[in-house]
Image (cartoon, rainbow, N blue to C red; front, side):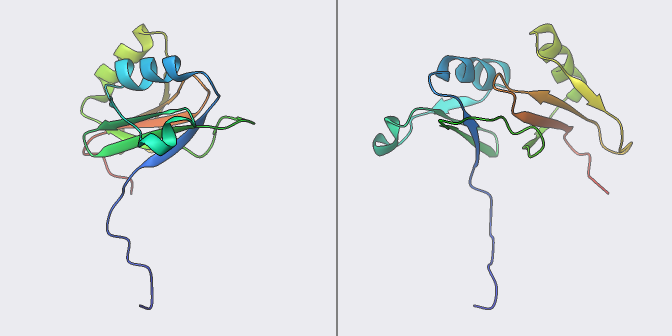
Length: 127
């Protein structure tokens, strides 16, 4: 083999503080609509939560010296960006629209721990 051959995307992991699983479940489960999945038994004692949605898996892992990821971030495609922005804003989530690339409808939000998340209109493509 002369190079790595990446064939797909399995999951992304974000960090969270210890003992904040209820906040993670509310944000990722209730607001973002992801389904919580059971962690493998050997990993349960580490804390955190795992979620799954259409084409995406998100693992939230406990980090003792937690610091939010404010630059590095996942970019999730959504079916209706405007509706998502309205729903999240009404739920108390700060929505920061980003029109710096006019061809791509997108905004940024933060999870309850300060991790940056980008929401992108499905079908829009970065140049």
